[in-house]
Length: 44
Image (tube, rainbow, N blue to C red; front, side):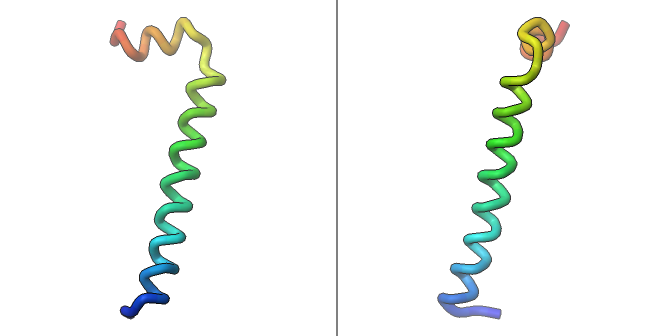
């Protein structure tokens, strides 16, 4: 393991995972009711 090509492959998969993780969480926040979102932020 090593080299420029392997680094590109690893970088691609890690960034794909991070983007999917971010998009999934943004969608979950958009779908959550506003009242429960405020409760999560305030902690009550």
